[in-house]
Length: 549
Image (cartoon, rainbow, N blue to C red; front, top):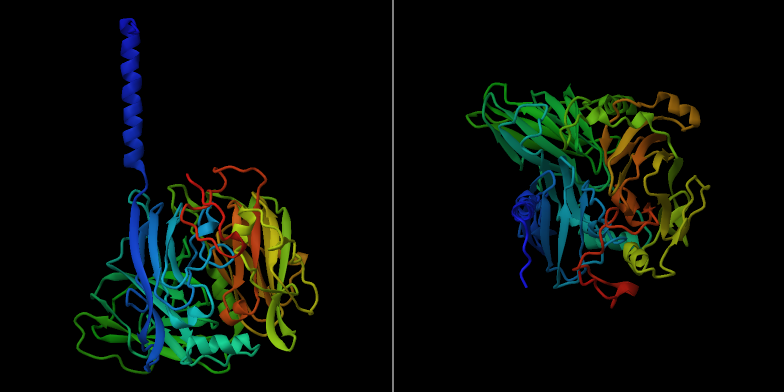
């Protein structure tokens, strides 16, 4: 039987069909681009301090390959584990919007077994800037497998400086000559590690790394401290640096002679090759340490006929005040666009009411005569099942929300799987209180937060009077100076299980971390994506049914 429609009815049907076809085609065309990576993880010889060591390579490279991407790109990274032990990579600064399953730390993701592979599927949603990746399990970070991540702005989004002639990744960090397995054994026995042996720059020792520039041109250097514990100062002989970006935030453009880069942090600076044609030293040295570590790289003018010559550029004074003042001077460029065309200053964080204050104090101590490190009296121990999987499958007994208090709790340390609950869409203040005579650095996965204040001494509610509530920099890793405090504001707009950790890696390994469970009772794909189809299952989640769609 044929359905007869009047002429105007048939006309409208054709219009509806054409619209449907157009929308289908548009959705395909408009989908954000995919970038594919295929990585093999293996052991191999490396020479970061001039002697042969066993390092972890990615596709035979040390450091690993850079990840180039553009805002909203989908990254498909297939990781083959050719090591004889489990392995994971985590993505320092990638927010994994609605998708903590892909975060690559043991609290969220099952390790990749030896001889197996796992494909990370991530989107750099609404992000720009400079970040890095590194291995998160055991003590693999002391063996390599780290690399740079750069997220470029979309073509139509203005950037507050001219496009540079080149873009360099600069990975700096303290380094041990001792094999990472030996370092892990020392920690497992409850002992402290000795001071690192040196500094690597892009996987090489003194004068090993070289950056070639054309006279008169300006270059972007993306500097990340991928080390294990020490803050480092970065400077270039005879050249000024212009700070332009910090972990995804365009900053007020400040001219610097040297820059303190604390462990886990990333910065972008512009450097113009405006000096006489020759080679110049890039100097990197440790900060706030009794023993000073030093290393150098070379800034090479393409027409240079003269090698770099000493003296090396001097670093800043060895006191907290200089570094603290520099940190306070790093502020957001409110008029610049971020990943979207609207100005970065359009989000008025200083006008939002804080719904909760969390105070976190770090300290060290012994448990059963073994060295441990803690937050608010709790030293983290991993559960037998990734916390995110246990939460997703409602597996009882893996962890307890509220197993760590949100206030300092004395000096006594106990072991637990520390999970702190938090409400989705809450706006929280976190105060890091460092009562020890060491440099600290704290990172929160899944988020970028506003660093509203830092100072020497003890924090009190009166300290809020000095908060920057206008143009504080938004980033994912912040330093806390010895016997000092740092305060951050965090809009909890990303549901998931998120690792909050010290970047002082031996301390992280021995318990100075926790997980923030950002929770909503509403089960909606709008708020959180379902478990990935290819998710690995381990511990008590092993054998659970993987979703079909």
